[in-house]
Image (tube, rainbow, N blue to C red; front, side):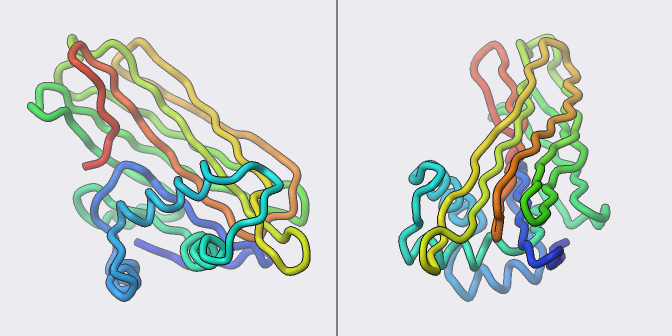
Length: 204
């Protein structure tokens, strides 16, 4: 489910890149703007890659960040699961279904006046076709935005952490701290399964 929180004036968005279905309240916002969940995720990532730290965002990109990087958003893969906080359970598979995986854990960020951090603590397990799997890559990326110049919004931090496992279970405790004056942030967690004929990221 989607919760809106305000902590010390800092807005956060947590996007779990394991999903296709959203909560009713987010779907309503989505319909009003005629944007799909995937389009919102893609736009947030596009903005992240478009700017270097210290760059000021265009007016359009700043408005998008203000609109979508201000809520704790949890996207559910198959159904709404009220796990509390930023907890998640997701499943995914390759096209044929010969390899299936499950990812579960927590992801989020914490912000103070200057001191900030982001994290992803989750485990990805192969549930079918383990003999076909070469490795699992768990990762988290985080982008933060704040005031730059005279009333502008700019990119103040960008970072990522990840671990690769060559077993059928990959447990990751990823965290990074940084110093910046943050107004908006987005955190994206992923699990990528590399198998004998390709790879897939849990998205459904």
